[in-house]
Length: 439
Image (cartoon, rainbow, N blue to C red; front, top):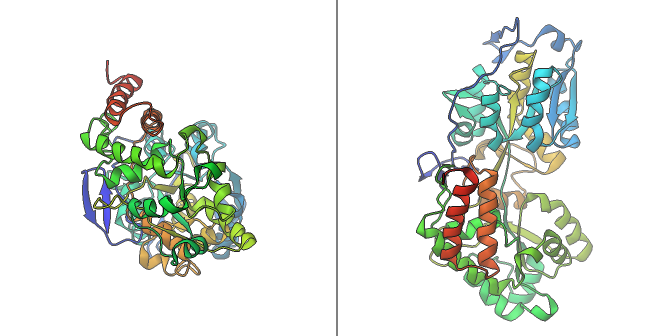
C-alpha cells in the first residue's frame, strides 16, 4: 500500500494495516530527571519495577484521557493485571494536554501519563513534558509497527505510545444507492459521483448527491492529492508554490457543480442532518460520525458503509491528513517507572479493546495485532476508515498559519472569488507574511 513519508518526501510500501507517513521529529529534549528516580528493569517480566508507593496503592498514578468512558475501561483493564494499583483519571482534551502539562507538570500537579495528538509531541519533548519509554521501545514497536513508532521517535528513543488513529473517509447510504442505481457499490471516482448527481441533484429542493465541508483544506486535501499535490511537512516551505496545487484547485473548482453551496453555508449541520434523514447518498466525514449515523440508520431504516475517498479519474489515490493519538510519560512524573509501565500497557490487546469498546476509536496497531481485538476484525465500518488511513499523509508540521492560509485558499476557489492560480499566489504571499518568512 502507498504511504507518504514526509521526512524524505517519497512514496513507499509498508506492511502495517494503518501504514501512514512519517513526519520526522527533530531537535533536542530537556525532560527533567525526578530527584532520586531510579528505573529498574525486570528482564524476566519485560517490565520496569513500579515504585513501591504506586505498586501498593498508597499513592495513585495520575492519568489524563480525553473521554471518561475510555478512562474507566482503561483502569478496569489495567487493574485486572495490577489489582493493587490505584489509577486516578482526569478528563483533559488531547488538544489541550501539552499546554496544560507545561503548567501543571512544573507545579507538581500534572499527570504521570497523558494522551495528546502526535502533532503536539515535538513541542512536548522540547518542553520536557515528554520522557522516553526506555526499554519498552522494541515491545511497543512490535505492537504498533515501524511506521507509527517512527512518528513518535527522536534520536533512537520512543517518546510516545501510538494509541488511536483516525481519518476522514467516504460514508455512503447503501439503501439509497440501491434505490437510485440498483447497486450499493460506492463510487471510486468523482466522475462516477458526477454521473449520479446529473440525475439526483435538485438545487431547488436542496438535494445533493454528496456533501462535505468544502471550505476547509482538511477536506479538500484528498482531491488535491489525487491530482498530485501534497504538503511537504516543512513549515518553511509547505508546498504552496508547487504548480501541481493549481492543477488540483482547478479540478476542485469544478466539483462545485456537485454541491452548489457557498463554503460558509457548507456547515456540519447541513451535512450530517441530510445524511441522517437518509436523503444524501454520500458525505465526507470521519469515525466520530459512526455512532450518530448508526442510530439514524436504525431510526430511518437505512444501511450505510464507509470506504476510501474518490479519486479523480486517472489520478492518484486520494490521501487524507490522518490523526494519531499518543500516550506520553510526563518528564515531570515522580513515578517514572510506573508511568512507563502504564504507557506501555496502552499498546496491549487489553487497552486496545478498552479503547474500541468504549469509544469506537480505532487502535493504532499493526494488521496482525488489530485482528486479535474482539469485534474489530469484523467491523466493516472500521475497515473502511482503516482502508483510507492506509492512503493518508501523517504530517506533524501543519501550523495554525498554514490552516488559516489553506482554508482561505480553498474557500476562495470554491466560492469563485479567485482563480486557482491567483489563489495559490495569494496563499504563498499570505503564508510568508503570517510566518515572517517573507521578511
